[in-house]
Image 1 (cartoon, helix red, strand yellow):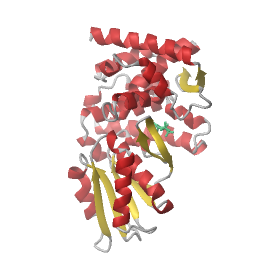
Image 2 (cartoon, protein in one colour; image 1 turned 135 degrees about the horizontal axis):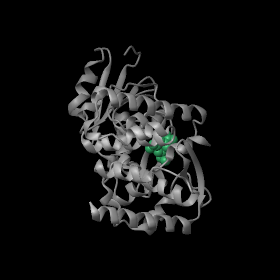
Image 3 (cartoon, rainbow, N blue to C red; image 1 turned 180 degrees about the vertical axis):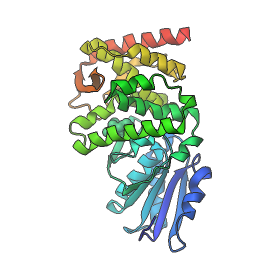
Image 4 (tube, rainbow, N blue to C red; image 1 turned 135 degrees about the vertical axis):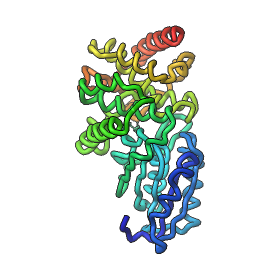
Length: 335
Ligand SMILES: O=C(O)C(=O)C[C@@H](O)[C@H](O)[C@H](O)COP(=O)(O)O
């Protein structure tokens, strides 16, 4: 990379650092001072404490407005590093180097954030990286839970756009993906996301569709404890609920049974939601960023490729969630 940056801080995590940190450092000429900061892997690092330590590091390294921050890793690292870059000195340049499937989603569109115990991504902003460097060879080193996680967002992009693609994805065994298949799905997903973000960068309208499955997912992540379920696995479960809710609330005709079968065949952790406290989940859902004047706005599907943001009364949500959790626990018992 040709650059005028004199100082670079690479932010990465304990899982990614042993694999790729040295390679990235070696890519810079000796004219550039390159430092690194390694945070513990896992969503729990997207915290106020870690953010504050990173700002201390920026200050002690005397990064200035001509310095660069690189986020090397998955969605957690990208969100955290991006949020540091967006606020330090009111914003310095930032490059994302994603190493996960999930990051095909999180590195597009400029959302950066940290979590609050009350809810996911509650402290954040829109801040675009100057580059995204996505080397898909890094995906070959992913553990299966991360592949499942990334696929939660791939399926979301398919449901938002294309019934044929959904049918194709429902045949996929995530443990046996070829690099060609993966590259194809990622470029399709990036295209869906980029098309939406280009029309509505600041999420005043159709960008809210990209939150399909996320209202429940974010509540689950906060309720179970950040890192106890991967983001994309939570999204995959959240999508299941959105499909059922779309059928019951909108009368939509959707491939919910096929989807649920696919989740089970691919070992998505449905057991994690069997004994979840429904009332606390609903309380957490109210902290969703789509909530306006205490009204929960939910992304549902009228059909595949036809999302809509619908206001759902709390009593209705309670009913839908009760039925859904009953269905999940019956399926979990049978498996
Ligand atoms: O980019 C968006 O917009 C999305 O909603 C994509 C989500 O997949 C992504 O996880 C996003 O970070 C969640 O956004 P949030 O605003 O609900 O925190």
